[in-house]
Length: 76
Ligand code: HEM
Image: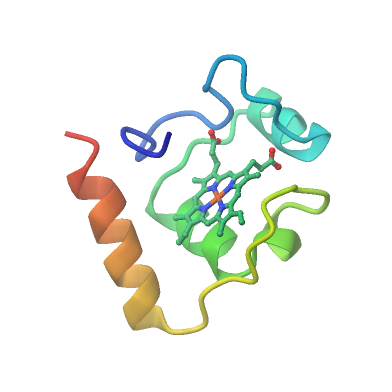
């Protein structure tokens, strides 16, 4: 559930089996803001070693802008 993820702490979906990597990041206080989402979505496996999000990432700034804009718009 990505609705409401913008500016929310990572790892909040109850019953979802997050990876150890994501749980550790969440315990460390990771919040999904403009900066962290941009870095994560550029290259998920580089930003969070061990994440089970099997997504290569987005190379174009324009695409990153668009997806972050969308997540923002769906978090009001
Ligand atoms: C542009 C597309 C995508 C966006 C914006 C996105 C965004 C995110 C975000 C923000 C999280 C962290 C959620 C949280 O902290 O609760 C996440 C986790 C995750 N996503 Fe994605 N995602 C995308 C594509 C995908 C795709 C294509 C897959 C699978 C084929 C996927 C599978 C997962 C999984 C399994 C996790 C949990 C990761 C873990 O526990 O390490 N995502 N995604």
